[in-house]
Amino acid sequence: MRSWRRVKRPLQTMFANHSANNRPPRWLGILTALLLLGMAGVLRFYRLEEAPPGLYPDIAANGVDALQVLRGHLQVFFPENNGREGMIIYLVAGMIHFMGRTVLALLLPSAVASVLTVLAVFLLCQTLYQTVEWDDRLGRVVAYPVWQGWIAGVSAAGLLAVSLG
Image (cartoon, rainbow, N blue to C red; front, side):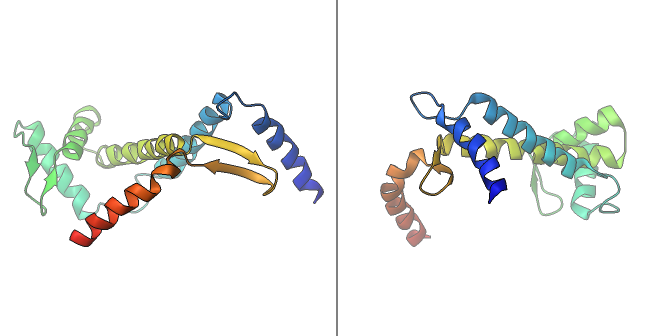
């Protein structure tokens, strides 16, 4: 119980001194984003070439298509391997151009994209849940969604779209 009071007091003071629109301090969002990106980067890039061992067939097919791109065979859609869009192929081709024909050149574009996806999801959640405050009744930090007024109207349109599918 005592340790909870040591955690609760700084959280209450941090969330009590907001501006008029009740937003947390800007440094808190930046710090949270940096921590999430750091964790995602460490977890994604740690032993990237070694685990899992070898190449999956999809990654190898991306490498073969990237070599074709480097030879000048440019496409928007690559029909081999059940068809794929060209963005990842062009990113892999760029990595092969700069790093040579290595396993890391094949794996690095998707690893960077996955870490950037964590940033995109963080920014999306920050946009959707703009109001964050300390709730004394619940004794925790609560995020009130900005979009909660839209739930009734959007759910009706969503039900229509699902029923037509």
